[in-house]
Length: 309
Image (tube, rainbow, N blue to C red):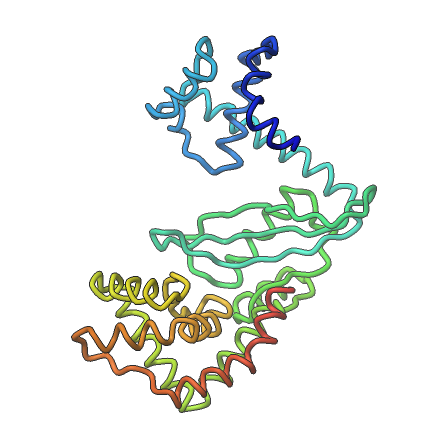
């Protein structure tokens, strides 16, 4: 009854209610909000020059003048220095820290070395994580070069005497790097699980053949516009979730599991689509899908353990 009354008379009551004026934020507060949005959402500095964003701000705060891109850059640099000093103070209070390090390629395939610090806050006893830096690494990936960059990070952040462990992958240069720095080194457990699964699967010929066939099917449906549209059409007709197929990527943890899991979910849609399309891709047989289902049951705990880690 009350809900029905509000539906009928809500607009009338709102019309009779006197408007409450909301104080307009000053320029400093608006500048702060724009800068925080750019930082938190990883937006480009040119956002303040975009026509759509300027029109939005004109509607929201007509008298507000957006800062220039150069001013935004200065604000972001200032924010970085403030957060850096704050993190440095937190690190000074930490009794001990652990570092994790890894090499990452950019979109342009340029190498970067990332170093992250993990510690327990002395006052709140909360676990904290701070990225110390992601540095362009054009030089050779030798243990000596890596050690030099990591030592620079440790000295810059004032934690050289507090590092108790360095967690990396099992690459020989990473292991030698820790030896040069005279820091205890531990191989990442999640990375080890991924390598264990990959090497185990590679040793079984039947699984390798099934994975290769699955990769071919997935690649076909992801690269052919016609095949992609046909799969979507079949998914709608069969009431199957409209999901894209997932391809296996050696450097992506659990990607084999996710590829086979998605293929099992889309089994009927893929079968029907392949049957109606002209292609030379050999479909998976019912017997091979039985093997895949058995394989998923074996790999499921490894996927769960990786997610937990």
